[in-house]
Length: 555
Image (cartoon, rainbow, N blue to C red; front, side, top):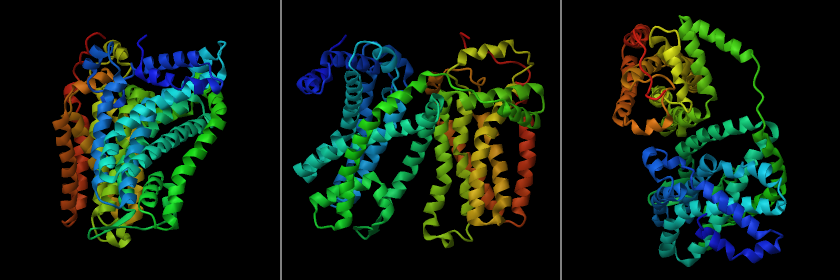
């Protein structure tokens, strides 16, 4: 097995580990094996060039090869160090970005480190000191975090050293260490809470849902951080508030402001103290709760308990109500199940839900909602609800892919006369399961904000979303549902098609706006959408109803 430089550095601390009661040679071998296995994992950021990855998989470390992307992101964020001398503002933004990037990577690419049950099933049954096993896992986590955080922070550190001096550099190093401690603890405690009350399947699903939360965070986080400050001329004014004590990036920014520009008052000092006290206290809590986490991790190895039959009966009623033929009902239920249970499909598609959830409110917020209800009264800002359809091209495009694509032989053997029932049932299931609940919730919130008078507009916008989905289906490349591997998605360049569909979504919103300027315009526009959508549902699949398309080669 290849000798790794990180292990050579670890050897320098052998005496310290042995004083802690760790069997160092055994711990070193365990860490070496874990790092070798990590080298074969393809990080989320580099999952596009599958062919090249397969060619290089045998002689390269995929994780280390991906670090240059994090270096680029860190380099772009280093501009905050150069912005001026208001360190609270600058470092709050910088550490907010870095914390987001590290925690996202921790959850998406490295959850298997914290959730590794092989230590209990393989190593715990051998004559190995439990402290050695625990320390090997801890060292493994922090080696990963060292490379990841180093890649993100190397350029900001260098810029800070030359721009702000050695004191800034040393403080930033300390805060990066504390940041990693806090991230590890928060991630582990989150997993512990889920495992304490739910089974392992719930935790695996939660990792997918965290992706949605992270997508929402990146979309709205900068809005929150920027609005902590008032920009007056060229000055930046900080407005203290109680909820700022809940934001770790603000703690870090306050520590820079307090230590490098002293004399700012007790508010800054209190925030700065939190940046040190909370990570250290959380890490001590993590060490105390580590045995409980290890015990609960066993749930990941246990089979999950399946739900009852109630949901199946409800699904059958929905399909009977919405679908016109038995074949459509069968594929409706089939797609409904795949969308809700296939973890990799959810990982690819569900994050786009985050943008559909937050974009309407970001546009609304930027258009006057920050001035109160008076800022939107009498306006047509409710038309920003069309931004909730931004997920539809991605959703419809990804319906072709599945991790179980080899089962697509069923299309050849199923007693169906053509493709129309397949496409229609699958598309309808995706819209009802994902788009309809999202749009319904957002429409209800908009109705509360703008009043019941916009309900006709919301109904018309919903009809427009349905028509837009059908146009996305017609505009994107066709393929039998769930019949291709996800790796093929990176080889299909449909960027310009998707950009055109985004413009088409804006076109629907523009037509709606024009309709509001005409007498009875909304009524006429709604009637046209009803007629057009009714016709589209019958004609969009017409050319696909006479034959069954061949499934991909090799199936």
